[in-house]
Image (cartoon, rainbow, N blue to C red):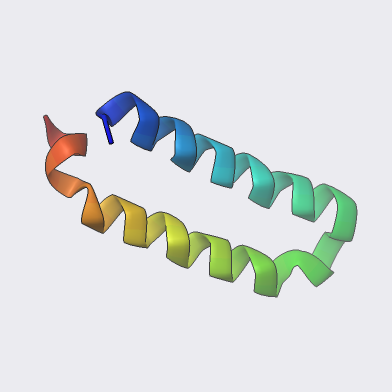
Length: 52
């Protein structure tokens, strides 16, 4: 996956976190923690591409 696509996926997930907070309020915390773990996993997996 290219750098642009990785960044697009991460931006999408961060947007999803914000939307969950807007819709669910504090009930979104658990979901957002899981989404954050996915973001971190993607960043670690594609670390070399993101640095280049």
